[in-house]
Amino acid sequence: MSLLLDDLTRKMQSYQPQQLASDMPEAAVLLAITGDKHPEIILTRRASHLKSHPGQVAFPGGKRDPDDSSLYATALREAEEEIGLNPQKVQPLGALSDVISLHGIKVTPFVALVPEKLNFCLCEDELDAVFQVPISWLLEDPRSHTDVIQIADTKLYVPSYSFNEFTIWGLSAIMLVEFLQVGFNMPINLYQQPKGKLLQRPLRPLPVFNFSNNQ
Image 1 (cartoon, helix red, strand yellow):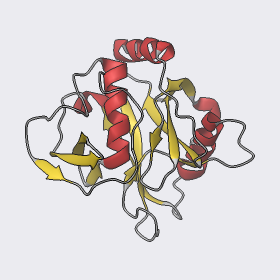
Image 2 (cartoon, one colour):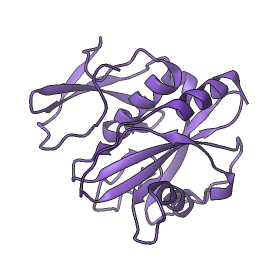
Image 3 (cartoon, helix red, strand yellow):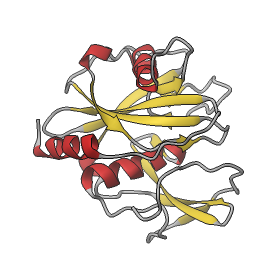
């Protein structure tokens, strides 16, 4: 394992994410990191025929089922169903803070390590692609622009990344910001206007985050 992942493991295991107490529907996603010298993060793209968020990049995950013993179990089940990831090959590192989707679903992200070389089995009913993004690339802050999301009196400056033919933005990018902050001490902040192009997004009726603006 690389020194980068050793450091990530220590930081995630000591991190105390902010949890949101609510009666909202629950979901979980898996931020799976390949455990090699040049670690990468696994992402998917939703199929274009879906009614909800077609073509959007996301982490493997979905809504909690009544039979799921925990939200982490939800993330593992969904990752196995969507990309064929064997739960026994997943090493959990810890959770990030809860976030709220535009549709009022509380989403808990879980960070985990997976083997370097994986054979994915894509669920074509839900996805049309699975791909991996080098963490070293993300640490360079290669955003194509910044989405400005207004929530009541608060503005969020959310990076949007263009990686090959994929665009990483929205809730997934918000999760990535906390991941990069916590795991790698990256000086990236949702509450400070960065340099570069800004794109104003519509006013959000619901919060999409639950972590402190002093990170």
